[in-house]
Image 1 (cartoon, helix red, strand yellow):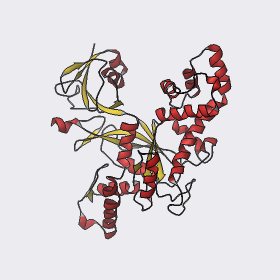
Image 2 (tube, rainbow, N blue to C red):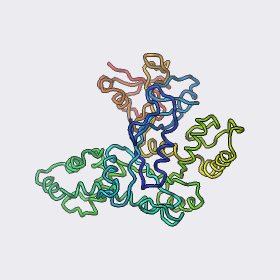
Image 3 (cartoon, one colour):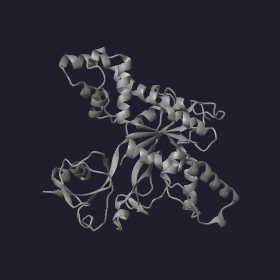
Image 4 (cartoon, rainbow, N blue to C red):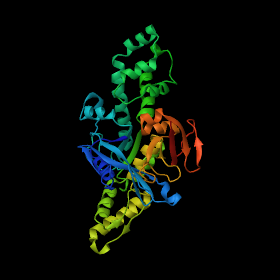
Length: 395
């Protein structure tokens, strides 16, 4: 299961985001709502299911379809709260950096209202610049990996030059366990001088910054976006980080709980909700729902929580959804389930890549694929598109 880490300094709403993202109890046979351990749980990314477009009923196995929306499970990690100096072991830095190894992408929760200082202590709203929090997290990442590389850098360079070794492979070996691939290193060093002995400390840090953008991208979520001071800060942040997502995790949590109690009709990612049992709502609940409607949903087009999860998977990791089937005419597996599995796969992947994603044996025996929508044969060089329905033919 793909892992996303939720990180940030203390008291920014990181746990609220984590709880709201993992509290939607979508009933699923194979992936029920579950806390994997104290800081891991299942969340869902959503995509439009082909069932509505094709006007057919579906029987998902590895996901769930609700009103034409596929909910696909991912693993969310609630990373220890960070403070400056985490790479030196301050606070819970070592725990955080250990979890860096597991995640493919980071969702960085910041306090858009500026009401917490650099270590997460409460201060007057607007007195702290949230931009500083973004920069400090990126610097902690860089300095942690820099510490790993710099320790043996001179010896590594001598070895590379004396033995004429592949520098990318040597650097990759030093970073083993971080989840960074050798291809990521090749891409990250492309713009740097090929004479490694000339590299300065800043060149090494540039390599690492490039690496992190490729291998560990960060999505910024500006939480507490409903507070008055937040909008000004969000506009300021967007001048430097245009993809920042305004969010209100507390609002998402409130809406999910109200929906679970049957008071409103609301699904994660919706831009609005419908009140079902107005007579059972207290005056305070009515005021809270009205506040959320005006200051969050109407203002930002949603609470931002589901948007953040989807953007992390589909934009930062460039994944698409593909539906493998065995019967290309009935769009079923061998048990008759229609559109049974929704597979998250890298954009640009081929039917053969899909075959290997399903099982190594299927990949090894791959002959060609069939595009079930168009009922045409597609070879191993065909690039899959989002919502493709593909039958894999093997020998």
